[in-house]
Length: 123
Ligand code: SF4
Ligand code: SF4
Image (tube, rainbow, N blue to C red; front, top):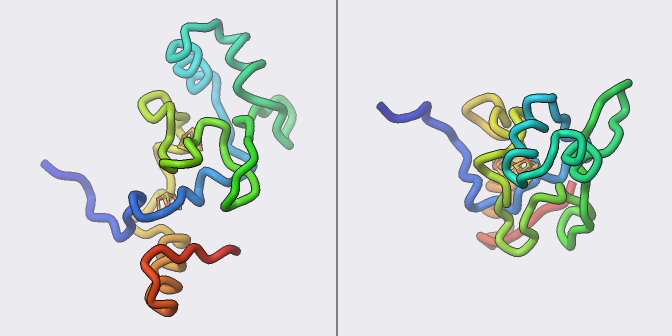
């Protein structure tokens, strides 16, 4: 019953982790996304990803953003929610990989310091 306790709240964060330029996808991720959009694996690979820095690597495409410059193409820029949440890649599911999120700690610290609950510090 219940998940592990975590010390961050993604609902209060403008999705900093979705601004990483290198969101890697595996073949399994691509299969899941292809199914989500009702397209072939090849088409998903072409349309939804681009070449990453490592040989053979495919990373999610990006879009321009008013907060972090660029974010994942699947992020809804207004609501700051993932538009493919149920089908998102494994790397997104596992992030941040511990009970704390470094960015959230930073965000909370700055919001307290500025006494502004909506403040968004840029790194
Ligand atoms: S940066 Fe951290 S707090 Fe913000 S959405 Fe990502 S995991 Fe959640
Ligand atoms: S797939 Fe969703 S969770 Fe993953 S980076 Fe893109 S918007 Fe964020």
